[in-house]
Length: 353
Image 1 (cartoon, rainbow, N blue to C red):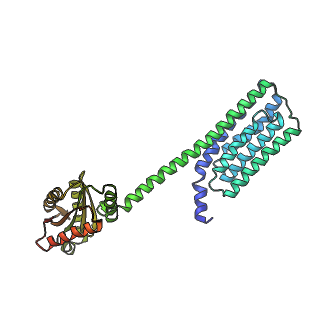
Image 2 (cartoon, rainbow, N blue to C red):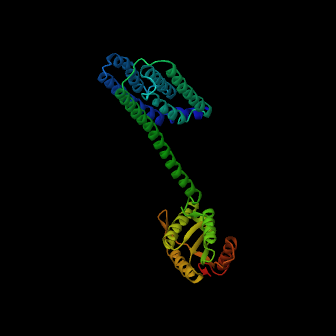
């Protein structure tokens, strides 16, 4: 593991992992208090005092959980749980539910992200051997106390309930963290996808995203009419040469805002490249698309471009093409571009369809 990954493990991973153990410690503290009350009810005051050290150790572990490294916290938690399981079976035998506290150890070891798979498997095998060893010990040794049937039922209820609560705390903590991480990843992927399909200057779709939209539309609706248009700013090079590229950028941004407004709910527009824009109008024939592009062309010529307290106006030339049900996107773009070129060579500031 390199230093960068180590830094991440030490600073980021323990946040929720420590929280899981902290919650588990506090449930264990409640458990030991309840257990001591049970011992007083059973009139086993000596056993009640013998449980007191476990309570104190658990309180200390909880108090220092944020002051020591995560691996030491895990070690202390394992020692407390394993020690208590063994001690409980020594006192009351196998049938009172003390072995249930082995399950939280299995869960918390599985969720240990910074441990290798080998270490996790080794620890689970150790817990299995511990369980079998304690079972065999109980088969050949008498417990210190022989609880009555009522006492056994109470202990079984307390042990099962509290061990289940510990497991629930651990699972809820880790699942909440995983859900949060999954949500962040989903939002991050959505943001990356949006950035990958967006032109950073104009915030319009870029060429790659528009190609994807049109191709998907053709694949999903092969028999549906649609139209495309290619537009180019007239004499844009002279704008850059005369007023600078920043002014040119302002022209692109203002026109893009205009295109968004005019195509809202009717189609899509993208920056195809440089000063070229591509329009896609699903379920719109050539006549309707041409009428809309004439409206857009008129709006472009009247759109004031304000840069450094000066107002500029530009014009555009457009070529419009209707889907013929057999041409692919490349052919449609070429046909629209040919009409655009024709308009450029015959006066500009026009829509050719």
